[in-house]
Length: 445
Ligand SMILES: *Cc1c(COP(=O)(O)O)cnc(C)c1O
Ligand code: SF4
Image (cartoon, rainbow, N blue to C red; front, side, top):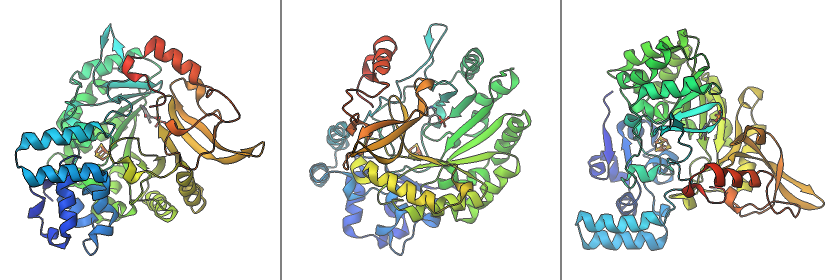
């Protein structure tokens, strides 16, 4: 199958557009001028149910929806589009709106950039001891854009991509020097957008040089859900598999961190073939997704998704809470409800699916998991713990926050039992003062 992409400029050439209401087409144009929009022929032809697109989760996952902007923002954009076709004017208004959508929730990209020989290595992020994130510059786009994505500013050209991660040898030197690092996680965008040759240029130096501490190469990707042909019939598929085999033969664990948001993404022939082929050469596939209103906010959907993943030989890994950026209003569930969905889904599957952890928030101190709601001294509390911590010593210690039925993110939570601070806050502050840059300072972002 040959890839064909659709964006704001050509989506009306899709024959399925005739199944959309006038309001929906307007919403695509209005919202799509603010938030990124890109989809492709596989998503359109094989994942979306065109019998009832406006109630279809995959449609809402990839096509802009009216509710993704506030009424005020929506009207402002609509008026501009009705009154001008001047691109600069449209962009100016779009940028004003974008600035109000918390485009840099955790200052994501600038943070945790490590230094090596006195120089910052742009393109690396090292937050948790064992795992280095690597953002290859050629992997900073995706096959289709998820409407909830926290990397949206990059895709609308608000953030020029800041990384110059061209130096494959720097990556190798950094990992070799930092013997606590066992995992490299290639991330993006989607690193599986890269041609196999480009990907190999990053991986081969790691294999050819002796880096004994390197035990796992992970690839964070949504290609299995949005373009499984990458692993079946693209021009570079065979070359990619040769490289994967080389990694596995070296005794390095190769894990695809596959992003699946809905069971439908696991049902096509193409995804099944792709998974089978990856598994047949010893590639592991671990799965993760955020919990999203309108897309997958029911225990049945998650239970079905985990079960299907296990049946296809994948390992359920994380359920995330969506970040506080972009269209978060549209997608967010209260933390209590998120926990409810997790617990009910978890109860419905057998132990082989319960490798999954969540619901989890990736925030400044670490990955905070909601363990549940309990009572202490007749007061309701959230029971939390860190699955990952900026300080490894914080991991797996239970802690408490005041119960708040409306809380949707870590920022909304306050320590329970009359405590002034969470147990890690002083140390976090010390880290801020001593080691972190100014733009990192913020409570828990
Ligand atoms: C989630 C995450 C990792 C990987 O954590 P694991 O628990 O090992 O999967 C690494 N770095 C960052 C910044 C992360 O958010
Ligand atoms: S595939 Fe990942 S990086 Fe790309 S839009 Fe979706 S969530 Fe964002």
